[in-house]
Length: 132
Image 1 (tube, helix red, strand yellow):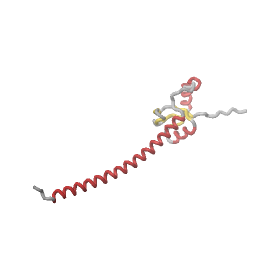
Image 2 (cartoon, one colour; image 1 turned 60 degrees about the horizontal axis):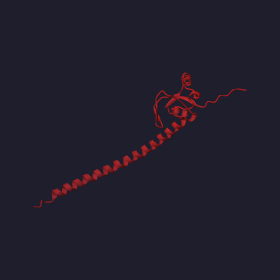
Image 3 (cartoon, rainbow, N blue to C red; image 1 turned 180 degrees about the horizontal axis):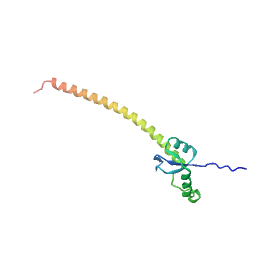
Image 4 (cartoon, one colour; image 1 turned 135 degrees about the horizontal axis):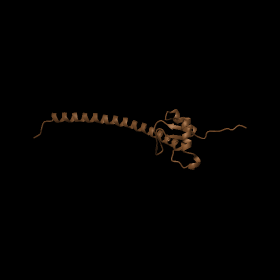
């Protein structure tokens, strides 16, 4: 009978800072993540797979049995929530940029109208004889 070992998590090293919920994940930090999140972060260039040396150092410095699972590192769920929040904020930014374009157009139209009214007012003031 052969022994089969399945990976429960993947170790990645962060290449670019990003937010995971309220926490900033800094460059160079080693994270243990699940496969879908690993694929997304590595595929987008935000992280890379840990080398064998980094994996060994990570395991020497932290073992789940020593910490009992209480760890302030973000979990895969935290990272997924942060990515969902980022996507929502990007959508909101797009909406707001559209509103800025609309409001800029309205402002320009009002300025044109104001300039026309000022010109009309100055013509009316010059053509009316002074009453004394």
